[in-house]
Length: 183
Image 1 (cartoon, rainbow, N blue to C red):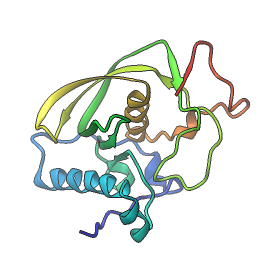
Image 2: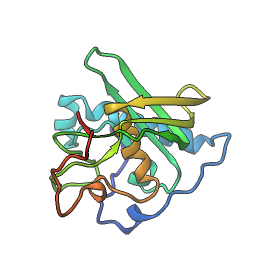
Image 3: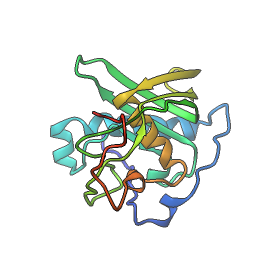
Image 4: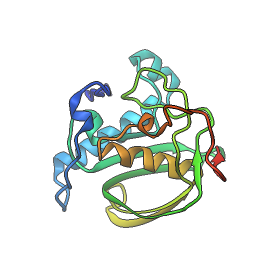
């Protein structure tokens, strides 16, 4: 199936807007969009498909990245032990964060950002997030650490018009914070 989603670039002014809450129960249009976004991520991680359709691999995608100003995002990836992480989160809210910080050592990337931004995007090492998960059709609470927490925070930031490179210290992009764990 060829997808019709178009990923907006960070230069598009809509990307800096704050997304609005999603009305529940979910409309068919919203559920279909979430399904299409999840399929996009799965296909983007299939090397053959990604090459054929000239798309980059991604692990998360927010509604705003496809031009929909709604507080929802999808996450999909497999862990090193082949465990599948998949969510269709609607109206997520981070309710708890750790004092401890972390960052991806190689830096973060984004499907909406073509240029490379060298530096550490400082994030909370552990977060607790509440949301409606359209994949399971339930209200859920996720406690995430390390990479999982980074992915959720990256997508959550999109809902507020924030990019990963906004979190990089412009004067000292590669300096770790005290006690920060590099992943």
